[in-house]
Length: 560
Image 1 (cartoon, rainbow, N blue to C red):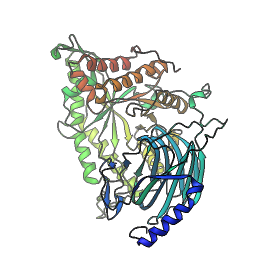
Image 2 (image 1 turned 180 degrees about the vertical axis):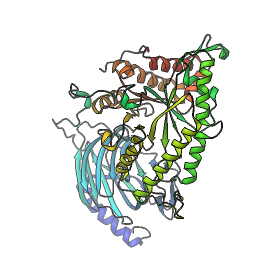
Image 3 (image 1 turned 30 degrees about the vertical axis):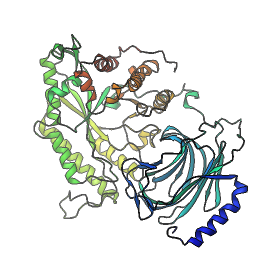
Image 4 (image 1 turned 45 degrees about the vertical axis):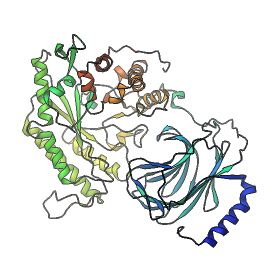
């Protein structure tokens, strides 16, 4: 343990450090914090870091970052910090130390996992990275470690307990200045102290070796292509809108999603007419929050069933919206909207789910068989509810796996779920994050239809190449594509991002060739439809044109 040392100890430590200055080229002290007192120099996101008992502590499994605010002009320096992980949530948990980081997820970062160190360059997002070096390290909970990261020029050295673990460099020398920050994902930790000391610059190392190879450079002649729209293997779905049930949608709210509402005059909300169907499939889901921090229990699952099938609740409203569309003039007496229902996630963190088989024992999800039992119970209840309702305008085609990447024992659980659904001639759908584990071989897990998120809309420092690479991955692995936007599109920057999704859909073929899902922020497309702002209503129009395959690009883009 590092805290509460004697003055003599600190004196000796200073003498030892000063002896090493000539070799390291150490200069002035840029920053130091013992965390004995709260400091306004740190910015915390999500409010899950705190100053406590002389430590900077993170006590929750949720993600969270602590940024030092005043170091954006730092260039060459040594960052020394003492830390310990108090508990890992699972084998995928990690603690990241960002340095020369001008903003979140940009710069260099060292990930500490239960068994390794991974040094990467991050280029705008957590999954937009280039690996620079790695090393094995067993990180036992409660053990203190001394970490030193030295960056000089484009050269990076990582020491743990004064032993050199990684010696690497960035041939691109992409980031030349920036501050430091801590970031935790699914673990609890404490920081004892931190110090940043100036170093002299070193010459820039060069390499003829290309640091990364892009999927855009690969030969795509043997790729299977996008997962096609309307295929038998996708349940006939073509355009799947994500329908979040976080407020009480009624049939009139859902009508502009079921059918296209065309206004004769933009500023006249009463001039709307409906004459064509819009989204053919609705993925009905609810986000119960972080499954690690607040795992769902039986009451949550029963609440979800009530949201679906309760009187005048969501599926009743969706069914009635189809009736409203017909009454408004849309042709098709036999037309049905396809429906996909979310399966609540049975988190392994849940040790007291509730008793679903009346044996007097609450289910413990640390046991895989109990997780399977719970999902089978939910599927039985959901199928029973749908059968009893006998919706004349809805067709159930499958269920949706909510977690956006695969970890731990989820693989076998997903496969068992898929097998259960196939017994009922239903399909399993999935919309993972960009390049998430599992996207390269989704059929191995039992997924029938997968649409990958590009995750391009929100991070401001991503280039449009990210969207092109996401489309290439979808073609390579036979996936669909997700179109992403929300109310941020009121801002011109994000509105441009919105149109880039559509423009590349034309240029790269996914507008007509791919199964598509649409994340629209849980009601923002409805807000655009109801807006008298012409630019917002035009986005509603553009999505409809994209669904119908008639959309014309707004800009000339060079990706092909």
